[in-house]
Amino acid sequence: MKLKRTVLILLLIALMPAVFYTAYEFSSLSETEQLMKNIYEQQMNNVLFSINQSAWEITSRWVGRFRRYLSTQEIVKQDSVVQIINSEQGIQCIFLTDSAFSDITFHISNDTAGRVNIDSKSVGSKLKNNRAEIDRMIYRKRVGYDKPVSMVLNSGRSQVLAILYAYDSGDKQTGIIGLCINSKQFIDILPITLDAMPQEEVEVGIFDNVSGKVIDRTGDITLENAAATKEVWLFPNYRLAVKVSGVDLNQQVKKRFQSRLRWTIFLNSLLIITIIILFRNIRIQMKLTRIKSDFVSNVSHELRTPLALIRMYAETLLMGRVRTDGKKNEYYTVITKESERLSHLVNTILDFSKMESGKKKYNYTRLDLNQVTREVMEMYSFHLNQKKFIHQVKIYDEELMIKGDRQSISEAVINLLDNAMKYSDKDKDITIETGTDEQFHWVSVTDKGQGIPGNDLTRIFDKFYRVSTALVHDTKGSGLGLALVDYIMKAHDGRISVKSKPGKGSTFRLNFPKYNEEINEG
Image 1 (tube, rainbow, N blue to C red):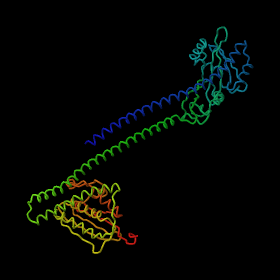
Image 2 (image 1 turned 30 degrees about the vertical axis):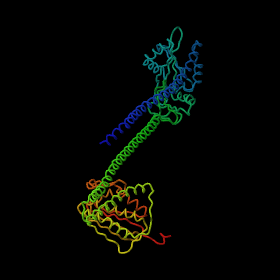
Image 3 (image 1 turned 45 degrees about the vertical axis):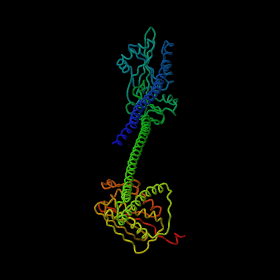
Image 4 (image 1 turned 180 degrees about the vertical axis):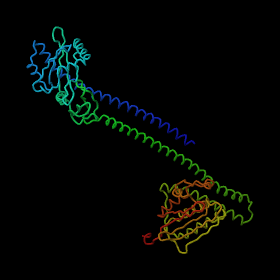
């Protein structure tokens, strides 16, 4: 519970800032992208405004010429007006009328005569239909604001539009100048304006407002990838489009968003991984603390038992309560055996410490594995008999010569015997056997105890590790025995193998390289 509570607190401390940071990042990201999009669209709208302004200035320049001509000529001469028309690309005709539309005078260039499908009646009808707008235009002109009115004179492939301007016709009367413009021809003039734009920065296009067909453009701009679009003021049937060269705003916003999102996910993932590693380290440290605590407790118990026996038998002898020599010898034997057991436990701890630090030194000599096994059994048989174990010793008929440290090998076999005794429940039967195969001479210890689950077999040689079974919890031990055996076998270039089935028992086998006189002596 303490571990879970600690981990929960760490998660809250670590993840809360991450949650707030992520939320802030997404919030600021959306606001930033929207602001960037608004600024970008505003810049593009400014470009469209300037293009529309250029188109307006072109028509204003044309009208200015006619106004100046009308202000200096008492009689409007057809040839002079046609000359002006011919000098300006896009103008097909000019018509003049008064504010009541009572008299409409047309001036048509010779090049477009016969191709301009308009007449006084149709124009007069159009003017009357737009009476309200024209009156507002006349009013604006009187107060000093010159804004034209646009209207379609006819439709078709060669659409003709009229751009109407007010002018002073004399005697405080206001007249109307109508510029008959072929919209396609007028649009052809605008590329001159487009070409003046910085094409390495901005792409501009003009499109048919209904069909979306390209009229003219710079770059590969379309209505779909444009950053902003706007109708041409003078010609509502055409649409302007603009974008920065090579840039699709939506793609740029999406790319930037994805980049920031990846970084946010990366940082959060890094934080989560750090928390997981921290959690695992805390759990491992707490587990090691518990294991070390259990180790101290178990070792204390292991030391206390032989010490208690030695003290008890020694005090009995000192008080003179043992009368017969036979009984005295029995007590001396117990004291000796328990002392050896105590020395074995202390040596195990000291040897493990030396082995782990690489300070353990081995005295390698030529040994008979059969003889080492017999010596161990002579020393350990007392403990087996005391614990009421049935034990069999099967010694191989021939010598099993190896090169090793006698004390360390004896220590390894004793550890296996000690484990076999500890983890045998009701069936107290142990078999010690020596033998040989093609590669190794070996000694094995077989018990009929609780056995080891398969998922624990790879970990039983780790220091302090003990299999989690009810019998293990009831059995005291240091958790170093098998780790010590593993160290000893590696130092002898051998290996330890184990076969075990839960409830059936275990067989541990120590495999030593065979002694080769030519190689070992050389």
